[in-house]
Length: 91
Image 1 (cartoon, helix red, strand yellow):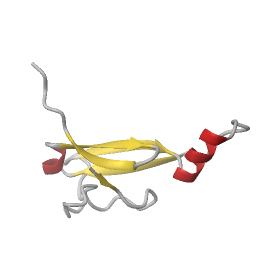
Image 2 (spheres, helix red, strand yellow; image 1 turned 180 degrees about the vertical axis):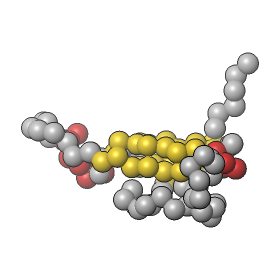
Image 3 (spheres, one colour; image 1 turned 180 degrees about the horizontal axis):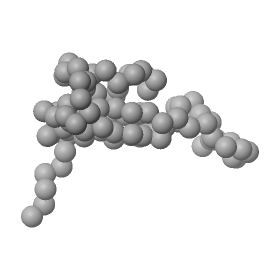
């Protein structure tokens, strides 16, 4: 699993760090949208009672068609967005 960089970066390339395919068309590949919170905010909320709304951000990522055949993206509050292999279909 590879953690991805800045969540604020504009989508310009495949989210797979091992791939460098530039984004040309959204119809090629798969677009992901995650509602995220900063790591510091997430850890603070676990320690303190909630006294208001948490600051949230929508982040978009794209996997090229080739990578989307075998990989997907997941979001974890501690790890951030990571590239993980797709699970094989169960018959």
